[in-house]
Image 1 (cartoon, rainbow, N blue to C red):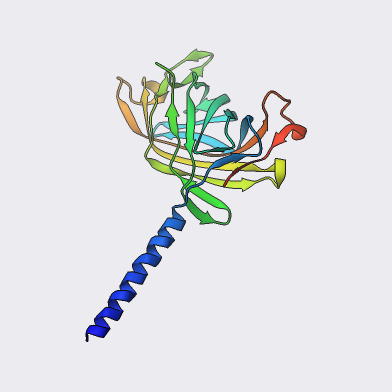
Image 2 (image 1 turned 120 degrees about the horizontal axis):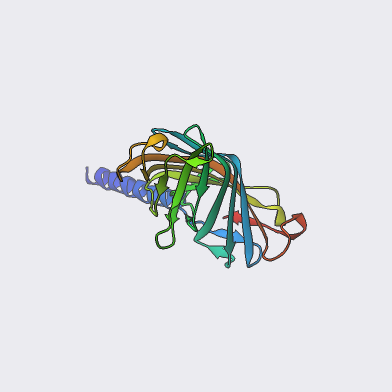
Amino acid sequence: MNRKLRALGLTFFAALVFGAFAAQAAQATYSFTAEKQPVFLTGEQTTQNVFTTTEGTVKCNTAVFEGTSEELEAEEQKIQPHYSNCTAFGLSAHVNATGCYYTFTTPTVDLGNGERTGAPPHLVCPEEGKITITPTLFGFSVCTSEIEEQTPTEGHVIYKNTGGTGKEMDIEVESTVEGIHYKATGGACGEGGGATNTDGTYTGSVTLRGYEDGEPHDAAHQVGITVS
């Protein structure tokens, strides 16, 4: 009986050790890497980036993302958005990031098929800065929605290395962010009175490429970037 119990105990211990190693592999730490530094990062949406509230959606035909990396390997990356040609809640709209940027942290989970996932990005803004969404009618503002600095805890980002080899390597970044806090002034933007809503979502994908900083951003000056 004792031998059986000892054998059972060893089997259980081995299962715990194997499970610990498997969990460690699944929760690996990755880095944003570049072939050289500094590197200028630029991205364009590959699927439309959409901010959604109970009042409707905010979409922009043009969404450009920019950043600079000073490290060959980094655990986080700042990316500043620029939105134009937008509509919000069925009206033409201006979306102004006012110096705010997204901070992406490296993924921790390998999904297979070259995809890795991690936490949603932080929204970081300068003092008194915020992302403002201003729908207009006949050129006049009808309301405003504001998204202030925050760290969403719901959602995820999926990263996938694409584009080829060497300097042609780029990263596809697919974001799903939920529970975004925002304030609306009423009208088409939603409930006003300074109340903070917490039901915003942001979805969309961007292809991020690297270029030699200060050089023309063309194929001849591209720098390979990966999440690895």
